[in-house]
Picture (spheres, rainbow, N blue to C red):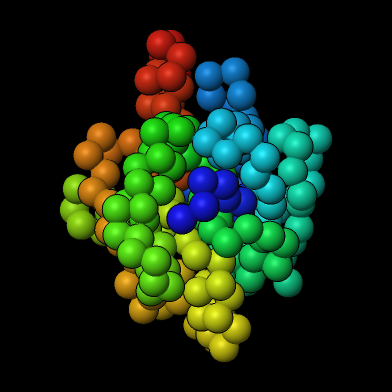
Length: 199
């Protein structure tokens, strides 16, 4: 695969379990959750084009777009972001992954390279957690494969869209990359881990 990639970051959720707060704008370790994810992408691929699907904000620097209609779910959000991907590969990420590192993206990229025999049949790679569940919002995908899949897809789930592409499954040995922030307890744990404070 190409060493460079673009990224689509989904940041348009309503944060219901967090009381409706702006999850991507919550701070952990001195940066917002969204800033942290964008920084990881650019540390992995310095000239990555980052498209954030969600309300525009001053930081991080990125292209901001909205799904139609806003709040209609991850598949319309992916479709909106994918329209702006220019590279052959892109990372599909949630905006609330406080523990995501460059090493995680490198592991996904390595999984793609390990099976690259020059054919076009490797559609992507995603992490699977310790329970064997695919983490659809921590993956790297072949842009052309996802564009073809989404063109005629009318469902609402990322599993239904991306599962049939048979991505390479990468065991998430540290349990961290897919740890998102869904509840106040999740946020407190992330702050304790990354700031050393009480959360």
